Image (cartoon, rainbow, N blue to C red; front, side, top):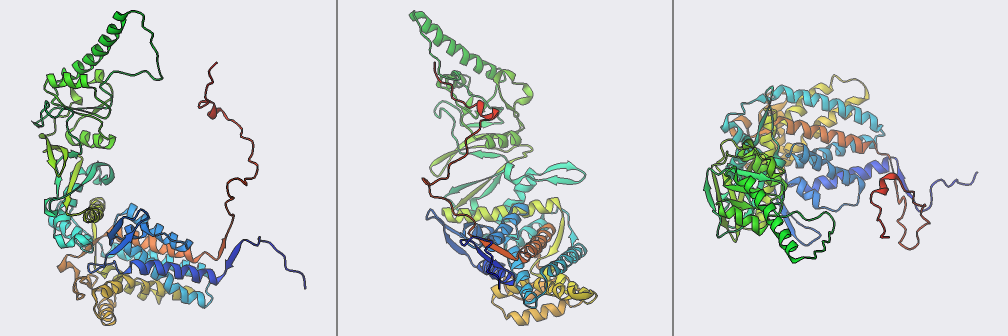
Length: 556
């Protein structure tokens, strides 16, 4: 017998074969179990302590998993799933994880029977194609202009969230905001950029009912000289600048030696002249409000006051872009390049109000704003954060519908229809792939089953009734009413889901399950970081031309 050959170092741990797949499946199921209870309208909230000691109270799948610190590599990739889902479509973060966990769970039996993972994956991918085909069949196109339908839709998407107790409030906000910033790209396409043009301002205090979407923008700034400048202007002419209204300083330190005292006065005069010129160029256009992203000196402030112009300084770039979009102005980089067309006249009112103990400037009543601010009020910071997360979800849903106006039934009905159709099809599949295909079909039932569990009804009885209703792929709209657990028609209850949320959920979940199943080897303990001080001699650093620019030039 030959001596065993050492290939890997001692410090490396290597697990391979079905052991790894079992470990991965366990880990993924553990992640799915963490957020399983947060699916559906009767969902529980999770309270997480983050590293800084702050608390997050939420039932948004993504927000929960984001805070978790997880050791197992497979579980980490599950968490990535919900993040992808959140970035892609903004909703369905919980369903993705539950579905992926279930897909892996049903695959476990096959791995025990020594099926090869690629066979399982092939069956899953086939199931995915057929599932998407089923979605296309039962999808129902809607009219984006019809507000009632939109409201029902957004409501059913955030009905599972904490804010559902405030009725239509959040849904209204979301629809107002997204319809405001929608831009037509032609060919019937609409682009809604939530991140750039919708700002959510959270102001603690007041009641949630006071939240509203402004037809314009609100910024957390006051005018530069509160006593002298007007704080309320109707139909203001707005100029947006991207340059400082103060005397230019030298690029690097400049020393000027003055011999005669008069020269000093000349220098000061020049500074004054320079600023006066700047202000004159602005005053020529008779604006009522000047907003700059950079500084504004006292002198400039004085000149502007003299002409009755209000000014706001040091605004964030993003806010400036929003104001430009809202009141139809163009951001100008140098005052001497101002044109009449750059002046924004689209706003109906500029006003500075005090909310709580801070001043906010409102630029509202815009004619055709392409950017807006959602003002959220509420009792506590935690509450506001949760409302904001829900609003993000709601806006994403509204955006998805505007992009792809097709609906699917909610309440687990879609999944049941897919499941029933796949079960039928599985009998026509030849060969060994039939069984994993059928298992994938059964895995789709995880979503309605979890909904039933969270309502606290008799799970087995409910599921049997539902499967009976869906048996031949008919009654596509029968699902579970998440509040009562009753089996109802989703059309009557207006419980809907967006088409591309569902499609994305299925795709992400199945692809992730396939990826995790195909891992058959984990090698861990690759290389320990060396403690500082015992470094190996580093390579000599070779300078490239790129480094030449940041050389420090030594004084002679």
